[in-house]
Image (cartoon, rainbow, N blue to C red; front, side, top):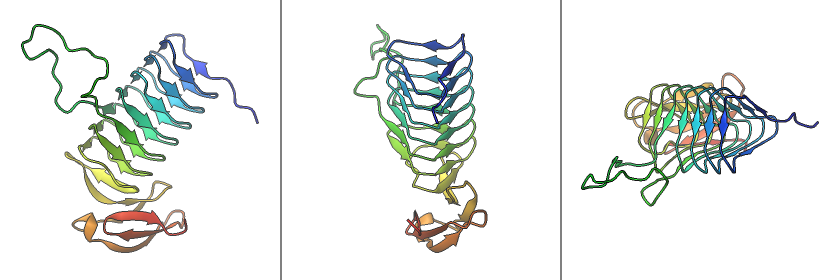
Length: 209
């Protein structure tokens, strides 16, 4: 079955070289910078900003007021909730050291990449640091400040964000970690959908894959 054409609100700004997949909706006052690539069947919420050369996979939901900076890659099936902010420079400055000129806004050698793996969820108003990875089907709690990579299927909360449990592909909580996640070894079954997981040394993997 053919997908419908993409829908772009008349107030949205799409710069040269932007690619939008079939069935994607771009809502009001979205700004997408040059070279960005958005997959099919996505939703880009109002007043969201997507920077130069950002890659967004297919079936991704990006809610309102999200800021996605350069060198961010978002894989398929990711949920980015309202007000999420990505960063790409650990030591940002507005001007040169002698303050006689503004630093350029374009990506350079100090711009660090961030990868959000397939199926992950980022909660509302979370802040995502740079030079890290958010794992497959991981879940970042609302308001969290992520300063290091998040393993697959982990649930992280707080400032700085820390692992407090594991979540299923379906989004249901699998288990809570008592103490360090690395100290937990065992199996878990999702009470919602029945999927089974093996947890060992902080790693969570699907038992049936």
